[in-house]
Image (cartoon, rainbow, N blue to C red; front, side, top):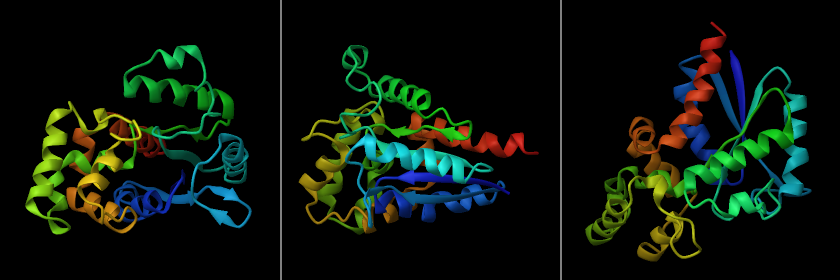
Length: 220
């Protein structure tokens, strides 16, 4: 069985890999597991600087040389020292999909490990939850769900919900639903929506899963 290790920046993503992605990939011959990045010795979670996470990625790639290592990082609030994020070319990009493609390529060029597959979410994990906001119904009132639907309808896709400190997907959810628990509710809502619908609504996220699925095809 092929092994894929996903380096994540928080417990929500860690749980998402375990509770939503694991079964799908296990059924096609891929064992997928999450690894929380370290912020400092003894503490895990949070992507505060690329300088701290870079050696962790390289170490995982080399220690798990017979497996594959990928990332599940948010474009929103990505550290300023991330490869080429300060480049003029990046600053001229206005489309979220173009931004993550640019940064993923920069990350690939910086890591240069043969078993590394870069991935960045557009714009953050909570965008996936806008694939079907009715899944929030078990956690909040109808008025809030309607307001979330208005946000979803105003954007071409969930991945087009932008990433300013006030309008990022998670900020919009928290404004309407202050009690939103990212770790607990974030994964349960995604599970209720279902992976198929999330993939249908979120093309960049889907392209990442396609890359991982092809690893199984190559192993046949």
